[in-house]
Length: 466
Ligand SMILES: *Cc1c(COP(=O)(O)O)cnc(C)c1O
Image (cartoon, rainbow, N blue to C red; front, side, top):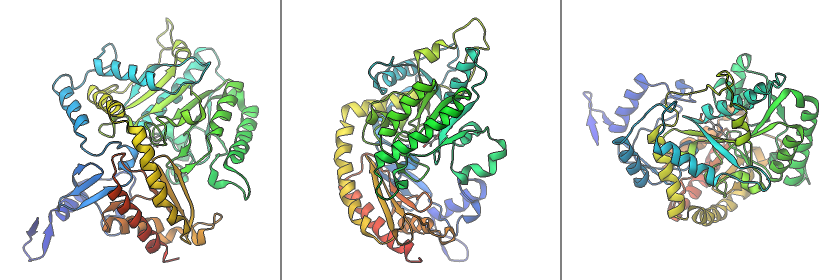
């Protein structure tokens, strides 16, 4: 629809929303000065499957699943219906001292599907939070507090991986290693210890990803040897360091890290906030190494992408460490919306879709199609690496495809690709100069073809400046 403003120029509905938005909103993860000229703003009126539709009726393929949250498409009718039913039954009640069916049923379901490792007692208890960062805070505080409750006051530190990401709150940021998000807040952050990343992109010539994983595990062992008595937990993103540029690593690292955590008596926190719920091919990425963490953080895809919710799964032994006559030994952490019934109902509906639609089998076929479409792009002269883990494919752009170089940041290669893709009806949101596909699972062949064609075009266009 077009409206005429008084001087006779036409202004579209989408443009009208853009100006209303920029008059009042401060957007996340954005240099607001870049709106609207450097960075176009996409005003979304509605969503349908993998598509976002703007106020002028233009369609955009959501190739990044709305920051990795969306599993089965936008406005998924079964999830929407579950939320609507729950909204007229019980929209919210505090979870301290109260209970409700969606929270209980979801906890039962999550514990039943959580990763298992033979010989280990299973994950046994679920603590809810309302976003991923809050879930990470919960896991960190639990690990620390468990040792305190045992009278071990020396364990005040965490080990995290280089290039890892765990969220934006101060505790989560402290165990993150992405300078762009972290550097300015460094004076506020607890000091974590960083172990080398097993990232396969960092392989030396002739080194295999498994050898790289072994080398990184040796670094972790050295750190543990020096600091074991001060450390409560190792936190990592299993299989893929997503915000760190979709960097992937050999699952053998997880097995080695699990063994080292056991050997040195520190907890293993698996942050599957992005990798969980089928994203890397298995329901949880930990399964690819056959390991089970002591604490498992889930969010993003937990509700199929419909509502914010996080769950932290803990072992019985961690839970038991808080049982005491003293209230101070209890885990007094809470959020007003802990275990919100609407969000739990959405999560239950989403897990129901995994059962009814045989999602993992369909994803296995879709990821093969993605691999076939991605392969030719590896030949481009500025593509250094094409990598895949299940429903994630990433393209690393560097000058001349060299692994030891990066584009001058002022060229804004990633931003050029973003704009070029948006003009062609695809929402790609590169991480620096890493382009990636992380589509809703319902994406079909036609949309995949569009995605591959547009990606090839924007790689050519965005790197032409170099
Ligand atoms: C996104 C993300 C988080 C943070 O979740 P939010 O809901 O954005 O706070 C934590 N860990 C990982 C691995 C993530 O990808």
